[in-house]
Image (cartoon, rainbow, N blue to C red; front, top):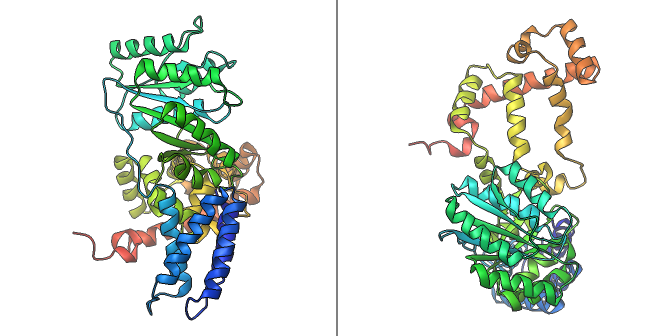
Length: 441
């Protein structure tokens, strides 16, 4: 995400990197390039100008410490200003109530229905019991889509295919939630291809009827400044409580993320990428600023891993690794965990310094298909005891996986190397992380 903006900002910082001190000339050149980068990213010109004016004011007013280079100082100032522009701190998401009601609004095609399913899964992981409400009575197959998503995440759904009154549907769903002890109601409303009075009146009537705890406006990040203008119109009518940025895995320039908070003065609460139900993140302005500046986002990466973390399984796995008993089935299980964490390329981009290195490499879930095919072609005995696999078995596995014998040999060699590395790391204090030595109580 924001690859183009990140690259242009990096080029802008070259004006001060390597300089002995900050001066009028190198700051002016840097500011000009930063402003151009923001405008190219579809940030409103007024916002870009005010942003760079604040950066310039701070940069010229700072005394550079001997331990900090002018380049580092400029990056820190821009990081702080980006964080502030996007809201400063994480916004609270309210799910209190009996039940709490969350109203989802936005244009058609912005990803409202998919987000509704993702939000249900997110809330279920936090112990909530949501009821999804299909209040889009216009779009063909809208009810079917939400029904499928509800089934995928294991959530309840309320719909009425005979009704064409979304306000009545929302009210009835609220009664259903109370009768079935659902503590969160998520209402997926209809969208249009453009803002129109009928649509605005309808969603405003739903709002008045159910008194939602949260009103979330879903923005397609790929639409740039147009999304920000639409958000302003919706906010004037609905006074929504937060924004959701979707399709951040697409070719987005970042203008919506950088402009919407400033324009409507409402926080960005979630961001979403891809179709996987797990691909939903709380929006942290400081972490997003780090990502934009190519600093990675280790905190979010750890949280993604923890969301798929099974403590008992992890303990069993650790014992097997320490005894050098890690087998192909264990490897296959870990692949499934990694795949659930989200887009592989996005995850690698969260590691400082890695995002730039992999930007031109095609990395996706298909990267695992060959490995999975090989392991799934093995018998349970072969998976748990790799030493059983002789040439005859390799030939059978190759046929089953649609590979040749060289692929099988290469994979098994890599697997053995990985086992040795894992064994060596586990002999080190704190599981092989030298920086954590001495931290254990």
